[in-house]
Length: 230
Image 1 (cartoon, rainbow, N blue to C red):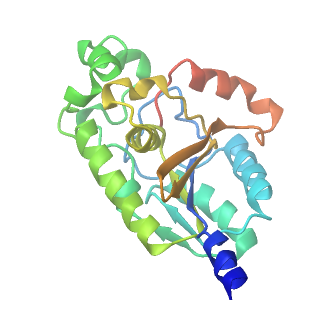
Image 2 (image 1 turned 180 degrees about the vertical axis):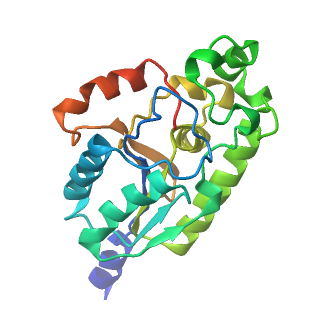
Image 3 (image 1 turned 135 degrees about the horizontal axis):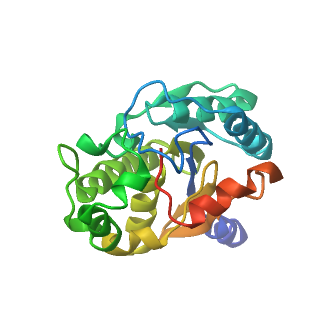
């Protein structure tokens, strides 16, 4: 009886794992701020990235796939979900930042705005004109993570979202102040992994792009220079 009890004591519940994935490449990345612009789809390289990521995760047990409502995220999520025969579940709370009047503008133009420097150095204090504050984005996205973790105890779940949203989520769980979240890099089709243990969340990997075909290397360099999502 004592041996059986000791065996039970050694059995610990598996952590819930969130695989946070930025959508794959589209023609707006590094050029314009897409935000919630409709009909921004993956380009040929983006589809190749999504397929490569799907192959990487094909043998991994995945309980559910969630995605931002925007087409580029849904298309990435569908590629990942297909080998697991899962339906993509849409969550508005992990949708892109609402950039308001900045939506659709070129990044070259935005770099000249005084407010752009605020976005880089004091993001917690910025409200995009006619749009959201990063604090609000972080709050809604983290609320979604908490709900998903509660729904999937001891399971692995894919969440396809956008760079700023994922960076805000990661910053929250690693205890990084929102004003420093721009120091994180989350490239197109990158894998970012969090586990939730009895001792709290743990960051397993950040901006893992080992699966991305070599021809998209220029895109990875662009993301590392700090180009915004779109």
